[in-house]
Image (tube, rainbow, N blue to C red; front, side, top):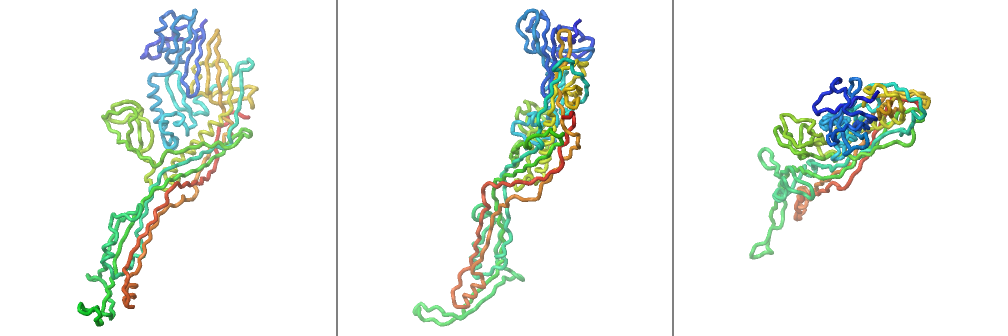
Length: 554
């Protein structure tokens, strides 16, 4: 009696029918169906020579079923080009024709905050599943019948209780150490654009002078440059007017009159005058500069593990964020437009790259576009601290999720490889939790995710092998809190000083003393902001710990 399942060779468009496809187009002498997290299920089989042209078998669709249940839907591959005695070896893979579309749609559905942040993703790795799932305690699970989903990496949607085979070595136990803490070190770099406005100059408040015409003529004009990177944004200079008349003060003295042309040495005395006028001066100067900023932070959380499970030091992930000052030059997505693979567009506040050549419809198809970033990460490049901004807070929230995911998956550190009698094979799925009791297992039993398995039919026997990964937590509640402590980066500033020499009062004193007054001078000195690299460490305080399920005791 053949206990192997039915194997039907079918057309691409056929839908599984438990009656129609209960046939053996291929007679399997040995059959194995392996599956594992993050991998496409496969079939390897040794079958009787089908006595058909072997060239007709490559890429042929095959359905494997038992008791009216579909176990596998895939395509044949690696078909030999000749007869091998009376048997041939075939392999098949469960890769549906629309798998790329399924993965694309799934990827886009998972790219949501706080579980995904493009600032953490290296350029070009936006569709790397290691990055997409970096902040999720999840794995990709491929169905043997054609679907794919992101599922909980610590458990399963269904549960099987299995008994290991009575043979020696049917249970193999292993435990790896787990770090007591998990954390992250973040580095953000950007070029800050600084801007200062100097509009208050006390020295110009009450300027008086006898050479007011010259001062007004030489006073800076709007738009003019002063020194390096300083621009006059507002300027005015005029004599003060009150009640529609110019204000002035006349100073008088008796002095020697100049001689005549015929007798230069001859001269008498005369009354001389000095007019001193107050000025209304207004001056605003803007200074723009660039500073290379580097901001870092590091924080970690302990993990709630059973006693004896933790060993070593904290495990810290190092992340260098993308340039937070980056701004896209892509244009907005448009309907009814030709796009080539790789073209970037802006839709809303995000940047998307075309996955394939396409002609856009009335609405953007998420499955044909990959989310690669944001149109801008900060509202202004003038910020001096990223991690204290609202966008920086979102980045820190994502960092917490990355820590949680890494800690929980790492705590899945006990593995049990087992051989067991095969249950109904359709009960063994890509999203399954298995419990096993055995004397070799500390505590007598274990329950964990079935991370890999193989279903075997051979020599009139059927059995399964598998690997369980179980957590060594305490089932304590997960509670992580993080807070940015007060502080500020190094302040980088330029300076403007204004000095007035020989004002009207000094000129009047000199005039009345019989001297020739020196002209009033206004001197504006500028000192640019220092250039260079400025680094600032942001202090983060934390509380709480990462909660982990208990799948076994150690």
